[in-house]
Length: 606
Ligand code: GCW
Image (cartoon, rainbow, N blue to C red; front, side):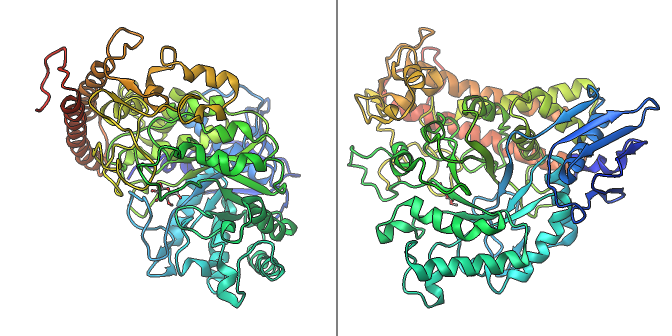
């Protein structure tokens, strides 16, 4: 098994020192451990200096020392010359991983085996693997781990009750790595304790949450907070009581406040029982409608966690307007490392090029955190596909410093993990950086999303969600495809600031890759390069398949060690099959509807 970690512990540079007045840390065979009990300051920032005799000195808060040491070790291993003195501090305070792990051991949208934390309704883990995970997270700069699914099923509610000692024991294991735990909570839980309501304005309910927080923080004093999915896809929430989401979030925030905890409140709220005949409702508008008007009414320890796009982790979505519009509220952008819609950790899909686009558009001030749905599981290599680990590592790098260069980040991961000779490393890095475009080409075209197999979300089914309840329609007919989301259409674009609205509202100037997200267009629409829309769809799909074949050939020439080599080969075979299915099914779907031939005469099935 190759993990970027494997070389880190053996490579502490000789002469690494720390000034006596900072927190103690240990460097030993097991890796790097900061003794976080000795110094209450949790500063993440660090500075590395070099004295005349060549020794390195680290300065920083306790977690800062840890991150600084990892940075120095990685630089040494990667042959990077850090400009000294070198100072660094993270851009985002909470750099979170959200696990969607259930206590029966399953992982919702998990593609790397079973849960690392739970089995048979109990907290069950290998302490050794927890330490490895702690090091993986710390070495990537990540500092919050929410261990249970946001869909809180029985008995996960009891993590705050009879399973609290297990939670505390787990927190002890992660603490040396500067990783604080977080727990997803069930909004209706007071009702299981003799209170007839979960109304956030009810005094008994408020008192129950306060008592709960007091008990939980007595056991886990550094818990990062509670994560909540409320009034979303059937989860309970304040709407039942005629209350809004500020009422709900503020109630939890009040309970967490004395302990420095955060109420992290997800904004994934939309009508998931939509009638496909209803043209008034447009799902991407939902989050804005539920939250934007509440800007300024959230407590200062509430963080609204917003998915990066207005739908749900599709290959291409514009940045959610909520992330741009709520200037008086603390926000976190939510990403998904788990490849739910992006190939299930079978198909290669390196996310950093996509994230760079998103981070590049985020406003500076009120986005104080980032969260990513985990791609981890108990498979030996932690991420199912060994190359999917690049997403965990580079997410950490970006969460620390969104200005990081994608090629540099991927190279750092590749060098630490495989240490290939330069030419082969270059092949691997450029291949990984291409994977997102390739996947995008052979799947749903030009921002339209959703043409996946319902429920499972792997493989093509162009009309699988067309008459369903989820609000995800493309309305392809014989002439045209897509939804008009401009002012003249559903009005979704009106939720954006002017400069962004202008970018997208005119199909003549809207970037091609977003065209069918924002517009309904005839197949004969002329793209900027003169091709018709339908020809562009055909071309992209044939290219995507060809490029997948080329990637398979390139990968097979790389000297991956076992067992990675076999896993990579096996998954690439499955990706080749998937890419061909997508290419042929999407092309056939549009050809049958439009009756328009491919100008290049390639095979499209009747
Ligand atoms: O789209 C959905 C996923 C669900 C997930 C949900 C969410 C945890 O298919 O599996 O539930 O998003 O983000 O809450």
